[in-house]
Length: 111
Image (cartoon, rainbow, N blue to C red; front, side, top):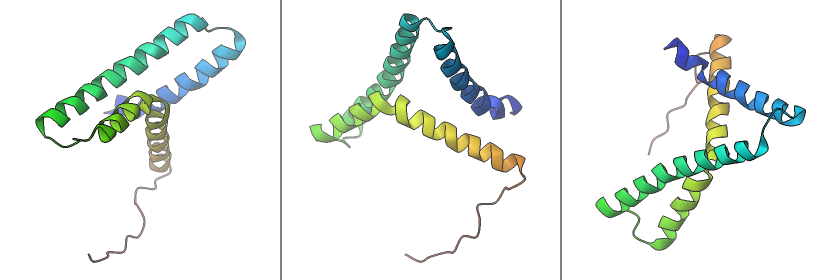
Protein backbone atom coordinates (compact mmCIF):
# COMPACT_ATOMS: atom_id res chain seq x y z
CA UNK A 1 0.00 0.00 0.00
CA UNK A 2 2.72 2.46 0.95
CA UNK A 3 4.76 1.61 -2.15
CA UNK A 4 1.80 2.48 -4.38
CA UNK A 5 1.61 5.90 -2.73
CA UNK A 6 5.19 6.53 -3.83
CA UNK A 7 4.36 5.73 -7.47
CA UNK A 8 3.47 9.29 -8.57
CA UNK A 9 6.52 10.71 -6.82
CA UNK A 10 8.84 8.19 -8.49
CA UNK A 11 7.22 8.76 -11.89
CA UNK A 12 7.52 12.55 -11.57
CA UNK A 13 11.12 12.16 -10.44
CA UNK A 14 11.77 10.06 -13.53
CA UNK A 15 10.42 12.82 -15.75
CA UNK A 16 12.57 15.41 -13.99
CA UNK A 17 15.66 13.20 -14.30
CA UNK A 18 14.95 12.54 -18.00
CA UNK A 19 14.82 16.27 -18.74
CA UNK A 20 18.00 16.85 -16.72
CA UNK A 21 19.82 13.96 -18.40
CA UNK A 22 18.69 15.13 -21.82
CA UNK A 23 20.20 18.58 -21.34
CA UNK A 24 23.41 17.31 -19.77
CA UNK A 25 24.02 14.72 -22.48
CA UNK A 26 23.24 11.68 -20.37
CA UNK A 27 20.58 10.30 -22.71
CA UNK A 28 21.40 8.14 -25.69
CA UNK A 29 18.83 9.74 -28.01
CA UNK A 30 18.34 6.83 -30.43
CA UNK A 31 17.70 4.41 -27.58
CA UNK A 32 15.32 6.87 -25.87
CA UNK A 33 13.31 7.25 -29.09
CA UNK A 34 13.21 3.48 -29.48
CA UNK A 35 11.91 3.07 -25.92
CA UNK A 36 9.33 5.82 -26.45
CA UNK A 37 8.06 4.07 -29.57
CA UNK A 38 7.94 0.79 -27.68
CA UNK A 39 5.87 2.34 -24.88
CA UNK A 40 3.51 4.06 -27.33
CA UNK A 41 3.03 0.90 -29.39
CA UNK A 42 2.56 -1.27 -26.29
CA UNK A 43 -0.04 1.05 -24.73
CA UNK A 44 -1.81 1.65 -28.01
CA UNK A 45 -1.88 -2.06 -28.86
CA UNK A 46 -3.75 -2.97 -25.67
CA UNK A 47 -6.16 -0.04 -26.06
CA UNK A 48 -6.83 -0.79 -29.73
CA UNK A 49 -7.37 -4.48 -29.07
CA UNK A 50 -9.83 -3.68 -26.31
CA UNK A 51 -11.72 -1.28 -28.60
CA UNK A 52 -11.87 -3.93 -31.33
CA UNK A 53 -13.06 -6.60 -28.92
CA UNK A 54 -15.73 -4.36 -27.44
CA UNK A 55 -16.96 -3.16 -30.82
CA UNK A 56 -17.25 -6.74 -32.08
CA UNK A 57 -18.68 -8.31 -28.94
CA UNK A 58 -20.89 -5.55 -27.57
CA UNK A 59 -21.80 -3.86 -30.87
CA UNK A 60 -21.23 -0.41 -29.37
CA UNK A 61 -19.06 1.63 -31.74
CA UNK A 62 -20.52 0.61 -35.06
CA UNK A 63 -19.53 3.63 -37.14
CA UNK A 64 -16.02 3.82 -38.57
CA UNK A 65 -15.79 7.43 -37.45
CA UNK A 66 -16.18 6.44 -33.78
CA UNK A 67 -13.73 3.55 -34.12
CA UNK A 68 -11.20 5.86 -35.81
CA UNK A 69 -11.55 8.39 -32.97
CA UNK A 70 -10.90 5.69 -30.40
CA UNK A 71 -7.83 4.50 -32.31
CA UNK A 72 -6.39 8.04 -32.39
CA UNK A 73 -7.05 8.44 -28.67
CA UNK A 74 -5.42 5.06 -27.98
CA UNK A 75 -2.26 6.08 -29.82
CA UNK A 76 -1.99 9.53 -28.24
CA UNK A 77 -3.05 8.73 -24.67
CA UNK A 78 0.54 8.41 -23.42
CA UNK A 79 1.11 12.09 -24.26
CA UNK A 80 -1.98 13.60 -22.62
CA UNK A 81 -3.75 11.05 -20.38
CA UNK A 82 -0.74 9.77 -18.43
CA UNK A 83 0.51 13.30 -17.53
CA UNK A 84 -3.03 14.31 -16.46
CA UNK A 85 -3.41 11.31 -14.17
CA UNK A 86 0.08 11.91 -12.79
CA UNK A 87 -0.89 15.49 -11.96
CA UNK A 88 -4.13 14.38 -10.27
CA UNK A 89 -2.27 11.78 -8.20
CA UNK A 90 0.39 14.31 -7.15
CA UNK A 91 -2.26 16.85 -6.12
CA UNK A 92 -4.08 14.12 -4.17
CA UNK A 93 -0.89 13.16 -2.34
CA UNK A 94 -0.12 16.80 -1.61
CA UNK A 95 -3.60 17.37 -0.20
CA UNK A 96 -3.35 14.20 1.87
CA UNK A 97 0.04 15.27 3.25
CA UNK A 98 -1.46 18.61 4.29
CA UNK A 99 -4.35 16.84 6.03
CA UNK A 100 -6.99 17.96 3.56
CA UNK A 101 -9.13 14.89 3.05
CA UNK A 102 -12.52 16.31 2.10
CA UNK A 103 -13.91 17.18 -1.30
CA UNK A 104 -15.55 20.30 -0.04
CA UNK A 105 -19.19 21.09 0.50
CA UNK A 106 -21.31 19.30 -2.09
CA UNK A 107 -24.82 20.59 -2.73
CA UNK A 108 -27.24 17.90 -3.79
CA UNK A 109 -29.25 18.68 -6.92
CA UNK A 110 -32.29 16.88 -8.18
CA UNK A 111 -32.66 15.36 -11.60
